[in-house]
Image (cartoon, rainbow, N blue to C red):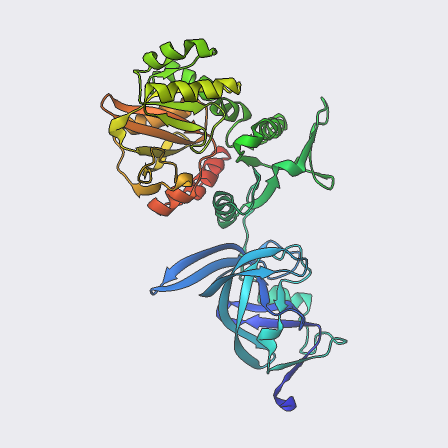
Length: 457
């Protein structure tokens, strides 16, 4: 019925009593199905055995100093497509909106609307049956003065200024990258995802620069977190090195990442630091294949491509004949390989220790699928919590230090000779280890940056 409906203009001020938001300007858009509110530092949690979400909001446009801490029941998490076609996973909350003297419950999504003109978008689902819109009008229900806004928000918290941190990576949808972005925002930092392929640099003695596609200069960062996939190591490390030249703190240096990606060099570095590895052989010529196999104790043995990653390019040769065939096949392709003794007693299991800033913050045991010898999670391996020994912790910390990595995934195998180091990863994945241990590894990475800037947690 017409007389029971609120008449709104294209812009209105509304409030959310349950969220503690006294007033916020909204864009009234009947063309949008879903309502959306600006939110940062979004984090789900359990309250009274129910799913809730907490988040922060800067309710006044162009004012990042005024901040309200909110929490609300979590209804859903769904994909929302913006008017520009961008798809985004968003948390959906339920709360009450108040327009004038009328209050009713609505659902709305949470998203960062810093680039939008309004902190709040009121969509047609929230208005259905209750609202009529006159698009030619604005502020039909009144508008607060600047003084009134100051009065309303005088007791709200003033946001502390965080660091400006860039995540240098390739895929913003990757679990690890999303978690690092979330963890940084949760701790009050300004996080930026920097796609490696969209960065380019200016080499100049006086004014070196890094540019982002479109011409934006990226020289004002406090810290960079490099997450460089192996296929783009050369360019990713060149960018990291450029940030280092600009005196930006990097969580892992370009030199450390580069040497960690060279399997042979990294094993030589580890051995030079007194860290035991499975017996390993390396040769240039197929003529040395027979002696190479004898050198590592014969078959069965492991053949590894130096350029391989996540278990790819790793072959188990069960007989001498199979080993000869695999080695010679790789050699015929001019591929560099390592030959390594097979630790049968490990039974398809290894230990991943996650080292951050000289400390093992979490550890899991990875177990290969039946019939598989590689325990990598990417290859279907399973992860479980394990208590690592003091010796295994010592090896992991020593290995990360030898490689000069502040963040490292250190893979260890248990053998009859004691723990042996398999590999050190400079961009270890977070999904398997966070899922198994329920630890905030991404948050630990952000804390390592804060520690460098002497920010007290």
